[in-house]
Image 1: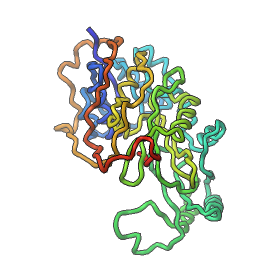
Image 2: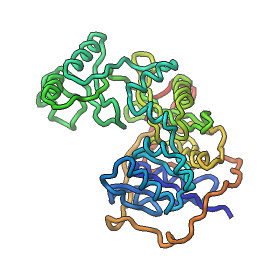
Image 3: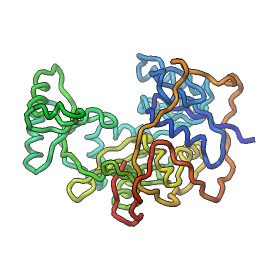
Image 4: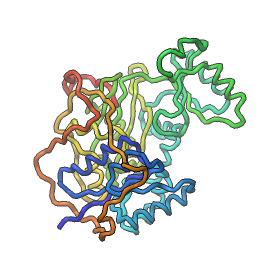
Length: 393
């Protein structure tokens, strides 16, 4: 009898409830049980999991590794998908292997390179991947100098933290005076240069920002699945242009993503984002974790989370190519249930002996298309797969 697979996601994004859904709907019909931990008792990932724990606050990175090892040993975790303290966790891969847990995460070297965007840009530029012009700034004078140079080149300057995830801290610089126009509608990412300079001059410590031109759409987000042998098994681009989202297999996006994933040890799931600088695609960011929108590949008949778990268990899924490219779509929000009380709830059979994972049976030859998750909603008919890339997510 094939045993169930126990997967743990730690303090992950709410959108990864869809990641969990896809693991359960895997094409091998393998039993999957999911453990989740979070600091927020009302996180939807806790409600979606089979077992859940609240994470202790105030742990040092080293203390968190000890907590994680205890969770894996006590919960019988086969595959751990770390987001919080990823760098510290992957440095202890051998310790997790010793308790029977495979880490679905890149090499320590790969995590380190892409923790700092300046280091990342220098590294990928060295292997021939185009990047935008950038300046690392820590003071008001450095900021003004970078802004003036960008404006002289006809660019609109923006800045973001040199390290960080998502769009946290991203701002577009403007020289327009603050007015009632900024108070109408929703808050925007635009900020006045003189306001930023004044804040920097009054600050007691330096910042660490990356200043660069604001890049244009389309945005193409390439989801990659890479084996521990450094070979990419899957590379599919998700495009975004305003509300419209779609998919692309065009080499102008996929080839540089493959170079990065294979060249820097981005094992298992990574997400590599590009935008346009004039007529040229350039690297925007690299995420050494599964993207929040990864589940959208189900619209192409691909279950990337399950393929990654198979790979982590030593069951190579082989080359993964989408059987078709789904039509263009948009994303809307929808409700997800929470726990009836703000405390983690455990399955009644949790005290049963947890069996280790064993190889899955051979996959079925036919392609099974999963039902699309609640978030993507189809819009107008997509352009043919051979058309110019629409835009990404």
